[in-house]
Image (cartoon, rainbow, N blue to C red; front, side, top):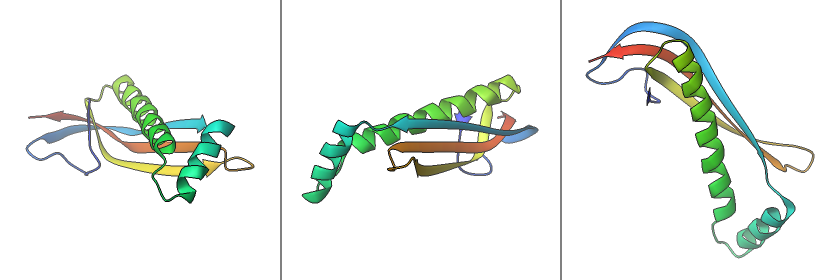
Length: 107
């Protein structure tokens, strides 16, 4: 499955539009991760824990999107948009959503 944020793929022709597809991932960050991340933020470092959680959530959302596209008979998804949201009473959950257009390409 080819995935791109652009509306087309250079050198390839879209022969069929299969529909809009989406994938979501919601991950909770536990209290120990939160505590260590806030310590890192205080000293000005990067929060590797949150970066890893973001990568994991993004991959889950893209995998879901790809699976939906496959079910529609597509071999690519174009125009992918990724959105990130923090959810929960104390912002303890992270949601990543991906959406795009499933297509059949050749070339």
